[in-house]
Structures are given as structure tokens and as C-alpha cells.
Amino acid sequence: MFDIREDDLSGEDTRQLLALHLAGMHAVSPPGSVFALNLSGLQVPEVTVWTARRDGRVASVGALKMLPDAGAEVKSMRTHPDFLRQGAAACLLDAIIAEATRRGVARLSLETGSGPAFEPALTLYRRRGFRNGPPFSTYEQTAFNQFLHLAILGPVA
Image (tube, rainbow, N blue to C red; front, side, top):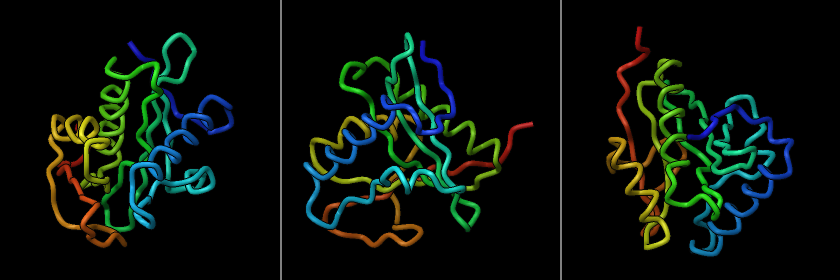
């Protein structure tokens, strides 16, 4: 079981996991193809960040970025290497989807890369109902990136 909480990004453990995420994205992506947010990009009003913790340790991080078109974007999903394949990302993604639903988001989207390094995340997203689709927001299609979307019907009463 994981404890999912909103994170203010002040903790060193969260910052280290986000640094690992950025470094990992740059290591497996062509130049100019990384759209992961840095710390200041995650600290804007339209972004909410959560961490999944177990025994006080950060197991996973993820964010929800509200878009101006009644949509939202999943950002900065990363699991700490010590917690891979233990369900931390799944719990966190479920919490992000639930919050997007609560906020009345019509469509939840994400941009990610292609290749073996991205397959575990793609499998998780597709298991939660995300499907490939067109670019959204300010993204442009390249040979490397891909876009996934999840239709959300709105808040549950």
C-alpha cells in the first residue's frame, strides 16, 4: 500500500527523484525531444504534484497540469528504482485520474517517447484506458514522440 499525498516539492527525496527523471528522459530521447518539466515548471499554479510513499520513502512522483481547453495533462511520472514493479505508479496514476475526474476534466492526455525505455509506462497507461491519438496543446508530432488520451466523462456524484 502506498500513501498518496500532494507534494510541495520542498523535500530532497522528491527533488532527487525528479532530477533522476529528467536525466533519464535526456538519456533515452533524441535532442530537443524532452518535454519533462523541471522543478520551476512544476511549481506553477496550473500544476499539482503528488508523491506515492511507502514507509516514509518516495516511491513515485507524478503531476497533473490543467490545460486551458478543459483538458489536463499527466506530467513527470517516475518511479524510484527501489520501487519498480510494486504498483507505486499505478496507485499514483489512479489518484491523478480520480483528481482529474473530480475537477471535471473532459480529456486527460500525455506526451511520451517511443522505444523500449517507454514500454513499461505505455503498458500502464493503456491498462488504464489511455489510447494513442493526435498531438494536443502546443506539442508537435515527431518520429519519436507519441500522444495518449483518456476520455473522462466528468465529476462523479
